[in-house]
Length: 130
Image (cartoon, rainbow, N blue to C red; front, side, top):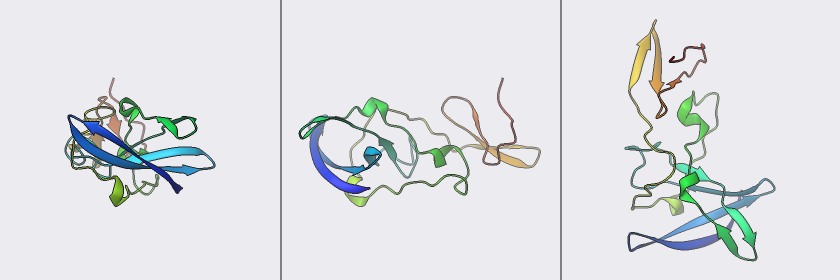
């Protein structure tokens, strides 16, 4: 991904700025906010802003999601590192949140619950909640 451009916005009256990245696959916006590591995945969240033409984008934080590595083994999923320039001190209280870090032990295997109540199984043994 290459830096495409920056956009400014406000959250609760506070100014913020993030960099949008581009590749042949489209546009990508990785970010970490004050919720990272507490209510969301510690490495940050991402979204794909819609390019509306010219220099205009639709950035909908309601579509922000945790990276795949948040739900499985880091050995199975590559996790993007949020660039320093996209680390915010304010809270983005939208999008996917509630990532829980409580592991449970089932038959000697460690599992974690995600916000949807499903088991995050890094070894994919097929255990699921009914």
